[in-house]
Length: 311
Image 1 (cartoon, rainbow, N blue to C red):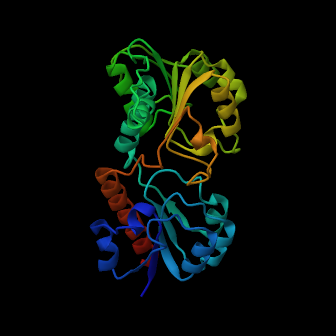
Image 2: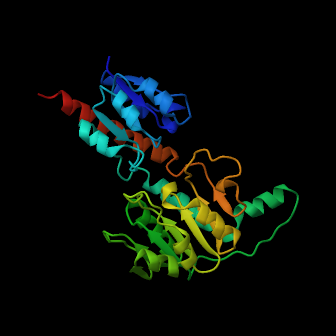
Image 3: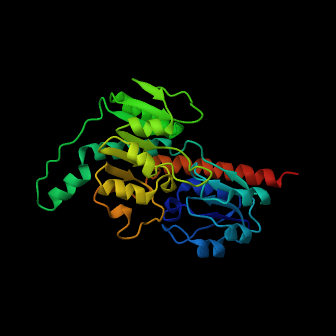
């Protein structure tokens, strides 16, 4: 029986019914340790003999792909593919497919939640009350503030529309400048202009091809005092050392992020900083997003493998 590797943590812990079409098509499903992101050693053990791979955000090395001698297609249950060695996959003729837009609502809603939690100091207030205190931090309203949206794909468009509905001004950067429907002031700008003008910057873009962060010390220095930075996209978009320095110096009020270079982050890392609001890569972890992303990823994988069988 042909095998398909299924590695997203949301699917290995509690395999959903959306995977059933793979079994009905005659494939044997292979899972890593439930609920845990597989490391290279586990992938090297599991991938040989697999013709398909329904993949998550786990880093995939050249060694893993070299060991996947039967692999014909990798189907992501999301849109990010910077965890995959794309040149090697192209060279081997292994198809890479994405579940376009499946997680957009979930990630956009989390970004909005992080923006509001940052403006109103919600985690600090909760922690203070649980400790027996009665903290009353003065917050800020989103109305009339400027929100910078970096990347206006399916997620960024939703965030821009949501903040504009709350009477924020939107300044956006996207090299493709797609149509973005908003309710109030909106303009396109360079990255440097976004960071110089926005009280809140939220990231919704892929990592640059050269791997360099777009949020570095220079851009953080351009931000208005007590600015807020939101990252529900990719950890490599930010220089974590520069963010820590900006937080320590009070130039950045809050860094709210759903993504880290090491997941889970080590004790004492940036995630532990008192001015950081951290969530555990849950942007697409909603009932609706998991169902939609899994269905699309399964459909993409079946189509690719079926095409492989055609004469």
